[in-house]
Image (cartoon, rainbow, N blue to C red; front, top):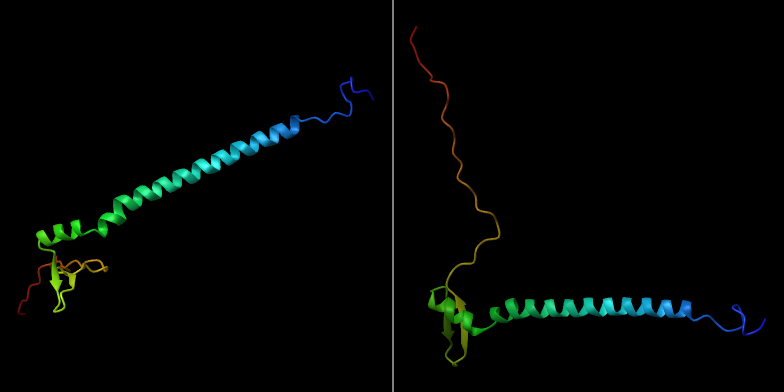
Length: 109
């Protein structure tokens, strides 16, 4: 077999090239998804977790009458809710008994 012929001893790199391109696409897709997940988590944390732990929102609740700042005799400040937390149990609806549909007569015989 001569090297000048089409099927000589030279290796074909077509298969290796196609596999590496496929792996690069999958790697790029995975990294894009991971980056998207990190960005969504960061936005969620910034929007919900950080404001819930800041004193800005506690002052707003205090201003509206829902909580109070407390201070003990050593000067340590704390936070106390003034409103009872809502129960996890669903509210019970009042039961109404329907009136009797038939009129009852009492007659003497």
